[in-house]
Image (cartoon, rainbow, N blue to C red; front, side):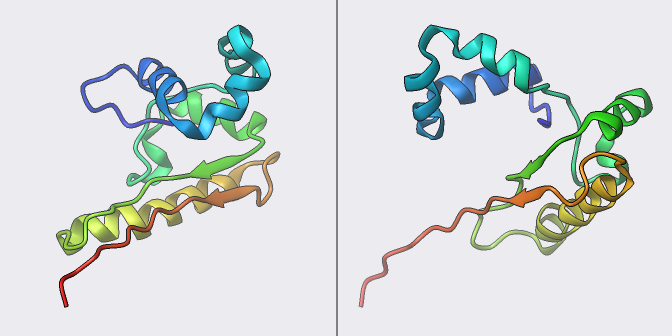
Length: 125
């Protein structure tokens, strides 16, 4: 799921797969066939994890709930001093909304991963 920020969801995902080193092992394994492999395995849907029901259209939610295998949640703020409301909506409410969604699935069970980033900042002294 991607949240549209002036880019088409599928295009944003393809750009991420192309540019992120996280996908290097898949590039090495599948080469020119990676796009086909990803199209067979991944469906990009537009939504917003900060909303109840993940901001999905009802028909999309119903379809996903019956077919969902895995949720990987990489949403989160990495700002060191965010507005508390934004931090709670992104880092807490989103996780709870995803959990509520997965609990409604008759297929995914408890297959969720939470990916987090952590930055190390150097300071003088």
